[in-house]
Image 1 (spheres, rainbow, N blue to C red):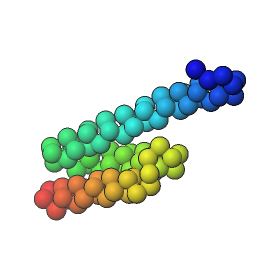
Image 2: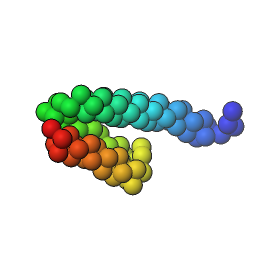
Image 3: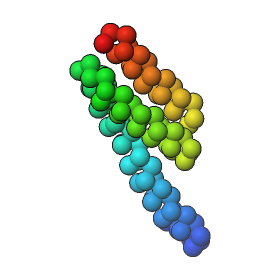
Image 4: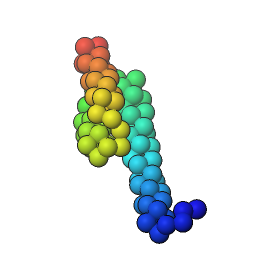
Length: 90
């Protein structure tokens, strides 16, 4: 345990931030899994709507510093790739 009060406060703040960040990451992963599941079912309309939400969440996570910008860009590119694949086969 820290000896200095400010260090104790920092630990409490870090614990809260960690919990918030983990919740955001979990939500991102869940939405992405749902998106890929919908894509496998070839439902273009629902997949497109969910893809829009997923891209927005990745942008928000990157702007808040939860994930690196490059990771968000890579994941968004993969989402777009899935949409293109459905549209071309659909």
